Amino acid sequence: MSRIFQALQFLIARLVDRPDQIRIERVETPKADLFTLSVPKEEMGRLVGRNGRTAEAIRDLLGAIGALSEKEVILDVIEARAPRTEEPRERRRSRGRSQRPRSRSRTGPHNK
Image 1 (tube, rainbow, N blue to C red):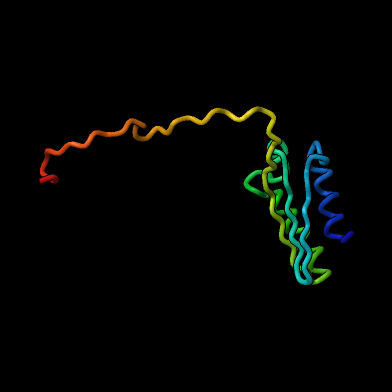
Image 2 (cartoon, rainbow, N blue to C red):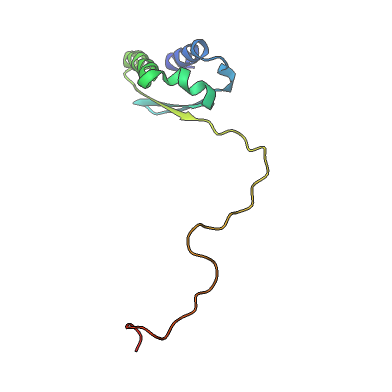
């Protein structure tokens, strides 16, 4: 496990109420590490912070740790999708034109 990954886990555990609900995906290349955090909606505010300051501070810290290994660190925070528990609703009709077929008028300036 890399130092960057350990630092990210440490920070998340201290910032949020339920760190077990946050999923971390890592894609490692020789020059960069990409981390994607999947965060429940109720934890998003704590992790991102006001105007994104907390997330930016995490990125800066991980970037400094990555610089020691000569790696770029990219951190994406996305909202986790809640598992679907209810049955799908019936599809509503579109609010556009009605479903009735229109009658064609043969009178008018465009039809001769």
